[in-house]
Length: 358
Ligand code: NAD
Ligand code: DAU
Image (cartoon, rainbow, N blue to C red; front, side):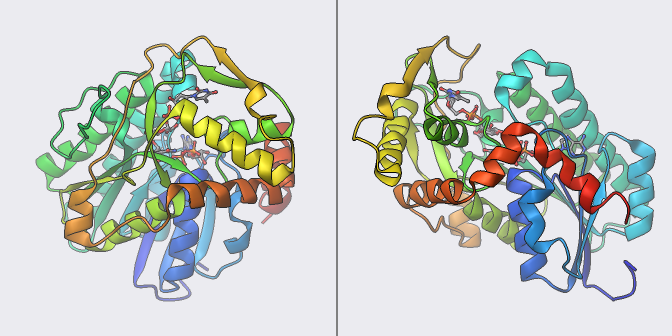
């Protein structure tokens, strides 16, 4: 069935049932009917097919459940679909989990990326014409900034400090090594903190929205003075689209919204918006703020200089943060069933019901 139509491109997107991956898959499936999109995801706790129900029956879309570290499975998949491009997002992505389960991160993020690279290399047999391996990475590989005006540029030396960022830095190095050694056509992007719909409620913004909704404590790490640079996930997906099509081979592009927020200031804004939207007394959500023990090795500040991407490829973020945060809260309040399924674990039954017997 996969070959019944002739497509202009055959693209493997990994991690497309996760938060950012689901937005990337949706954008590519809708925007490019002439591309065959295969979404490979192992459906870990973070993978949820309910994130992409709207495109699951599209002609140019196929879902494959499988593990990026499974060499023979990945080989079979490359033979089956004759991929010419990979957009690689599958990863273990949560810093707190990397502190308690670092080996999972090394396996998925390092070995998984290396497995995809090696199979792409073997399958493409060093014929690089029309091929592309795009690795989606994070600004955390650059380490931590002090408070001030400095920003990470593409030239900033790597200084990863958590098991998560060390594993992502390692995978970035492997991607560049395949470019340098074998001349594989690659492109990389390093993005700042994303927020938006379908984010698993372990990350700051959806966790706190969910907790406010249920009047549960809001655990602020340390004094809440750490700074993150926030970007709306759909702007990240659009940047990936632009880089995939127009990025110079071998290059790295930083992606960010020039939108730094100290955690506690962001949390107070979130609390105010939630009070308004839930029609609760002004200040009632802030009463839920609870200062807790700091994250081990907590990076103080991230800030991305995205001027290369803006100048070279003409991308810029479309949404101001306050508007994006308000839209994001509205989405979670309109999709409480999605939140309930995710927090109860019910979402994991979706695959069995929809895909198992196909
Ligand atoms: P996520 O945790 O929401 O999703 C990850 C997806 O990968 C899930 O669907 C999961 O099932 C899948 N996956 C995990 N292990 C797998 C395996 N072994 N085989 C196949 N699939 C597997 O992550 P996210 O927040 O959407 O991040 C996606 C990518 O973007 C990651 O590479 C992450 O490092 C990067 N990134 C994230 C952010 C952010 O703010 N969330 C920012 C910059 C970069
Ligand atoms: O910078 C990009 C990175 O952003 C991505 O590569 C990661 O995949 C993504 O998880 C994110 O990492 P952070 O650690 O910055 O995101 P998180 O949402 O976990 O935390 C944001 C900030 O909020 C951070 O300073 C820790 C703090 N925090 C987080 C949680 C979950 C709290 O104070 N309390 C919390 O309960």
